[in-house]
Picture 1 (cartoon, rainbow, N blue to C red):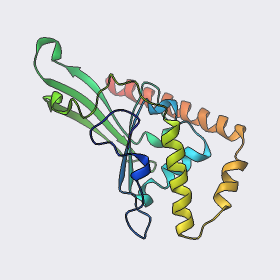
Picture 2 (tube, rainbow, N blue to C red; picture 1 turned 60 degrees about the vertical axis):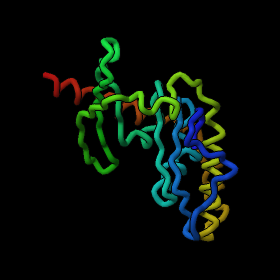
Picture 3 (cartoon, rainbow, N blue to C red; picture 1 turned 45 degrees about the vertical axis):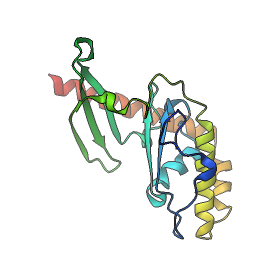
Length: 186
């Protein structure tokens, strides 16, 4: 499922649970996902239930999404396209909530092999449709386990102060990561 044109994209109307346990077995690709995946109860529920529902989120964005969607990061380090060599170097890093961290280098030969599958030039559709779809699926998943309404009240009770504090915590974490990177370079 994605908010961009892709030969692999499924129509949300065709996506449903694949078994009695509530697994979706779904990959959600959100282009410019940082615009829509900000801290709020709906988005937190998407992140919290991702593993239980067998959902993987791949988010490419200029603006960073909420911190709990930034477990694995990858960005272009250098490409040789300007001299007609189909080679791109990527730097990747992995940081989970328990503090495990790892990083490395990925070298991709001939990335053009995926052209037509995914295009960075495609201006993404509104990602709110995906957020709303996944929020509905989280509620359906909870209902399968007889967990009705309590979560909906939790969503409505969350206040803006909590969101501001969470956003501040994200900023502090980004400063900490930047300081760590600077110390490593020295």
